[in-house]
Image 1: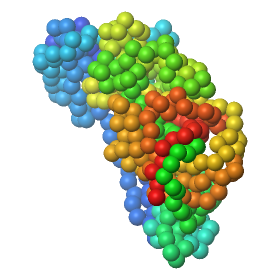
Image 2: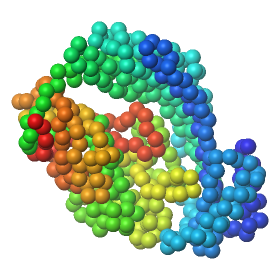
Image 3: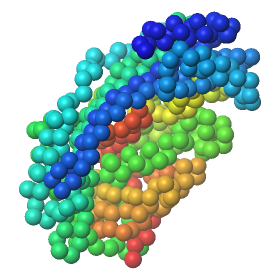
Image 4: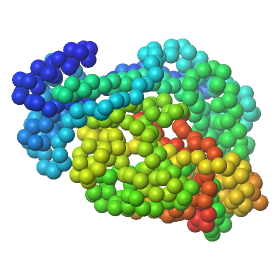
Length: 445
């Protein structure tokens, strides 16, 4: 069923039910992926998915209902269910169907065609063969993958607002496992695109990273200057991103409550959110409520300039929405789109020189158990490299870095000059440069 037919059926059903304010949100996605193991294709998948959600204002409350099945009968049922759900809502949030922003950005046109399955299989196998060719220490367990998807999001409502986005992404994965006869280590790397000529660079990066971890030693417990590599700083920002939600602040789940306009981070720290950021595949011109997205400074030169708002939370707080309403079925939550700690002015080698002595953290694991997004406390098992006399030197592992996110923001001393963005992500993406934080607690041997 095409979207024009869907709109007409919802209009008819809403008119029949006497609804004046309503909204329909439709999403569809096609994806294809291949994986290799032991020199053959170990997994292949092709999938299509989609769904539709309906929201309406009924008796002053917002009701919603959603379904993955779309036909005339289901559409009538969705309207009835949404009205019934509105009758049991106890929230005092104002029910708002958005009339539309003055203007919206435009996404560049993109093809709706996925790469051929044969191409993805060939790329995956060629990438795996390249991994094996780069080192005699590469062993079975080494895997590769290639994947691609295209997705479309559409929204229309009773005010005549009609919006649509079509986006997509492709990426390759290389997981290199090496064994020197005494130990096995691995390295997981991603790169955007599924072009054969990019496979060599990805394979080399994965193998070099894995080999560099061999022979890792231990560190003594104490205070260290820590350089978090960009990927690990992205993980820290992602873990604690709920503290930027204005709804969480209202619920007492963020220590940033009441802090807008105050200093919360070091002068060198600026954090932005931009759903249309260059270098990100999954851009969007509108949020889950139909509000035009835009770039915003969440923290500017250390000052918390704004929390993130959807329509109802902004109304409750006397603010303007920041266009950060995310759609999950019929529910709206608050989250960033592309949140980045902006770059500084130093190269990575200059960060090491500034640290003088310390640890370069390149792996962190266990955020689900070792971090509290409300208090900001974290204690995470890490691996990386020593920094000695301003240089990255030998690998180290199995040590724990403990700290607090809110304190860390204030203690950042310097940042590298390049923001790293993930090759594959969802509609919420995090980016960061490498950062230097001095005198952090490390538990080692």
